[in-house]
Amino acid sequence: MAALAVLAVMILVASGGMRDPMSLQFQVFGLALGVLVALTWIVDRRDTRISSWLLVTVVAGAVLAMYHWLGLSGALTLLLIPSALAAVLISVPASTAVGAAETALLLLLAVWHTDQAGRTEVGIAVAGIWAIIGIMGLAYEPLHQMREWLDEYSERSRQFLDEARDRKAEL
Image 1 (cartoon, helix red, strand yellow):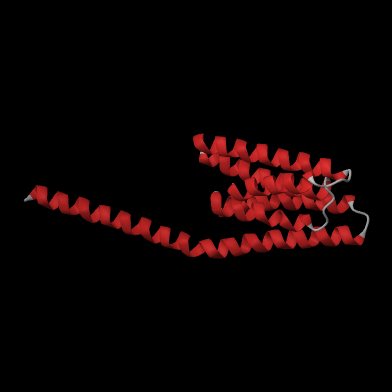
Image 2 (cartoon, helix red, strand yellow):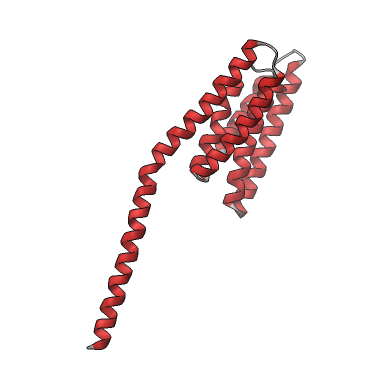
């Protein structure tokens, strides 16, 4: 969240010196991003699960706004960030759900694009999203295996402890 807050301030400062019609759009974008980051921080104080989903949504919305509203070509590739955030903050299945939603949105966008460059950008973004989901899945797989092993170990230890208590009671 701190990185997004810094980004919002940097956008506001940088766009303040601009003298073209786009500067107002950049200023509104920076202000909106700052407000959404502050809202996410406030929600995080009460419920981290909701704030995690809100942060993923804010980042995805910011990337889409950079692409569509600010006209920053190449911004769609940044849609892999919400998928990675979902994997880290929520879970790998949540990351997969976010990636599926982003892919559906991008495929609709590809239909809307009439030029090859726009479709290529959409294809690269989709490939990046699923690559990062795969990488995050591979990165977290050993942790999931360790957790399963620890759960089994804990269950066996509990059973041995119960058996020992039963034997002690019999004596």
